[in-house]
Length: 264
Image (cartoon, rainbow, N blue to C red; front, side, top):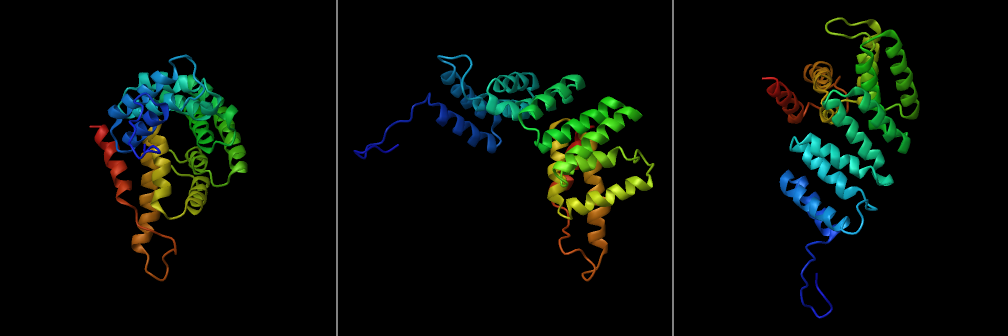
């Protein structure tokens, strides 16, 4: 900082905002361990006089970094502490639900995503995650499918372009393994029509699944794009090609390669 005299002042090494900003800068560069160091320095100052601080962000951010480091137990504690602050309950409980799914704790995940929705009922990612949880908990029973479909219908009334709920609707419509119903084919057409022909829409949704440990769903989604969108782009001529149709980006195949690599 430059003072009125023109001399340079040293930044306070314990400043909450500086440490949080530095942690975020390192986080965006993929330097997660270094980012955690700065986030924890911010927390140390924030909690020096109050163990339950007014701002939950310095707790939420290290949770993200710790998750990337594979330290899910520590990330869970950090996210949970962030939910003590009302402003961060929406994001905090959503992230807790993702970790619970990765750990196979479906009951906890449903409870946590419900708490996220209490804070923000129009959180489209949380509504999508709840739909996925209901599908997994139901083990494809008729009652569970009915509950999930009701939830999806309510979510699509809020936003017809909730791609996650559209894909979940497609998954429960009868397309399992190599068996495909006429209804599933119709829903697949609706899904592709609304998601469009840009691979980034599919990649972003696939990343939502990956962040929750739902890797098979991510693969199905990306494969659906490759088989039904990119293939049409490659085989169509210039006159018939959709105006917004684009070939997939390298990220589409990078996500698939990463997933199959983790299975080896």
